[in-house]
Length: 517
Picture (tube, one colour):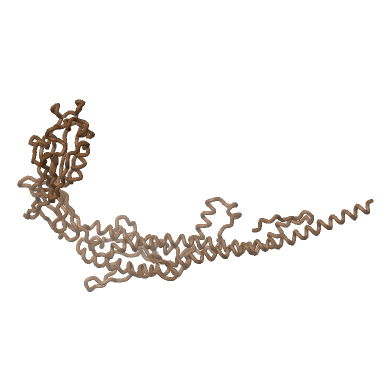
């Protein structure tokens, strides 16, 4: 709309703005209609984006996992004394009972040094105990520990279980903290406790293969034990030797550098040793509840999606509802506006052909039969079916229910065929449901292929909708320019009329003045 200064009915007395508004009403309606259509298209895009996200989640997460037979082969494992061991089993473990003894737990190697501040020779030049910041140069020849045993040039060699050797040389400016860091860099856990004036050193992992040794040489390269003793790491320190864990499973002995064993599908975490005559029992069985819940969760996710699709496709017509103008919104409450707009949104995918394709793909997959050991089976063979057209709520006619599901008021009193099948024949359950989910996975993949009108993993023509939205933007701009030009045209006409009337008025005044004189 033009911002030009406009002369209104000063001389004519006409309500120029109202007259022009009526003259351009048709063109204003065109602009409003285009904006309304663009608004509805934007809402439609939002609905599709939300729906596509739900479909893609079903495809990429749930169906991707459930199309594999391993999703239905879970095991539960119990152990007779969970204070001694915990056990988990993968799908390869056969059902049954096994025996277990915990003979020995794995240990890391620990060196707990003796206190190094028991004599005056372990104090610095100010008579203070050693701290992590004590340096060679802050005391006379590192007298904070032992100037003779730890003279500059003393070298420690750390040898870890894999044969790696690391040399640490005592230098003039080295601090206790530096020495600790060097021990860590060599592959050990190390710390210095200032309160107790002790070094604590251990292997980073348990087991014999992770043991370590620390040896020392003096500045001349001669082996010495005095250097270690000066750090409290001599013969009087406390030592815990590294050792492997050992268990006996079904009469066979196994060792591990850690307290965790992986044996033929079992993961055993040893917590405490058993007595000589004590024997734990491990019982492995099909995880009936876990498999049941897996199928139930899939059906719940499917039902949420199919109910939404059904409701959108069969929504009531909103032909009597148009997108509200700003003036119309001003006359309504926020709740009224929300209800009005939601009515329009709910109808935007009514009888949509693309939506119908998705609906047909999903429902046909669920109603199909799948071959299991030469026999065609259906969901109904496992006590899974819809409630029927007349029994189900309007938007739930294609939702599936499990007979005997205690959480389902409609079917909780029926025989639980699914749980029975999982208990007695888990292989059949696995083959059927993995086949169904594989079929749905592949069908959705076909729907979500990239085309000229849609992006990959989109079941709707998102590219076309984007183009259409941009087209509306161009059309609205053109229509607004046309409206503005048309308004200017009429305002120019009325302006010219007002100018003419002004001149006529001036002339009349002159004549009247002359006659009056």
